[in-house]
Image (cartoon, rainbow, N blue to C red):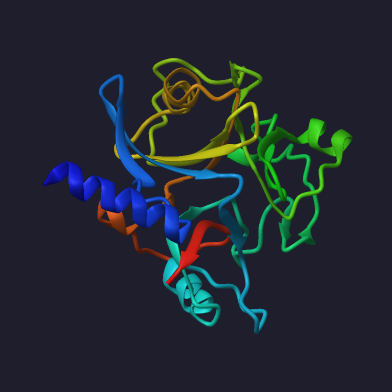
Length: 245
């Protein structure tokens, strides 16, 4: 009976064009747990900031409300970069091919100023995390892009300023991309972790060559299939995987 059910689910996935496999799951690494969500470059992965009335969305429920007009809904989503008090992005933000805010070179206080920082780029056939100076030189054609910082992993190496056993611990979230650009892996810590532990999760467990920190303190996840519908104060940029309702 179980094998028959599995066959039917697989057959349904083929005829509808949608995978029946789970997108999000909890994974453990060195006594810490993380909720991890994966999306392929061919999936409908988007960044969100404003609605059609040019108002900042600020949360997952507002994104779902905006998607309803398309007959779409979120599979999962998380906050996707740092923002000012008006919730506008601190660095580069591209939405539907339009640059809303320019590249920032950091140099200020806070995590964004802990250079090198980087850009999460969604193009038509790839998803990439790219260190900012490399991004500026390459000028990739991003349909969506969000700059944040610091980089967690840079060409297989941890950010040089991360300290083992550092005492700055928060709930943190970020994204890494595979070397072939086919998959983006999003993660949020289920316990408070430092930068070194979070970076090692992406490098040594997820095994991606490049990963980018999105935020701490306000890290938030929407992933109903694993029981996550985090709420809180309004946020800025949001990344989400979209599907038909």
